Length: 249
Image 1 (cartoon, rainbow, N blue to C red):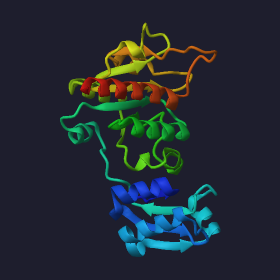
Image 2: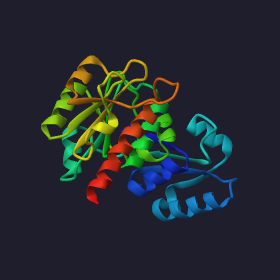
Image 3: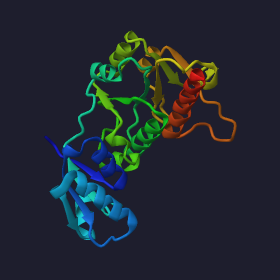
């Protein structure tokens, strides 16, 4: 099984909390003696024991492939998270799903940012196509600041077919489009919902757009015409979260 490289405090701590047994080796910068590193070492030693090793800055740079490692690098087995739509829905159970579907987001920085905001908004998973999409890697994990270690990430062979599976399970697919007649704030997002985002510039592919149950736009009040896909995802997901909170009051 291919090893996964985790870089930085957020990614490594998130994996330690979620699945400490998946960690094979954890390296830390022996020259760092600040409180954050001391707390990290204490927590890590208690959970992974002999898997924790000292390293110098140059060794950590070689392991991470860059200098932005914060003094922490780990190797782990890939996290055991939902691998397909059936497993995902089974894991969600009886709760109302809130999903994010990304069609054509190829920049790993954007994917990492989307994972971070999806985790913050309480989304249950991110779904992407296997082709024409960024996949999980070290860059995604770093940008996601720990969300890549806890957010279910499902890459599907046929996105339109996967979307139809979600529809059959009672999940409403809300696509985003600048040409939509309704705005985000005019639709009910409090039920089982999947927000569908397209790539910046190109938007969703034709079949993806046609498979959506409804299309909405994000109102733009300034001079710019559109938002970065991770920002747009955050706007949509947090509006869904807001509506759900109001529904429970």
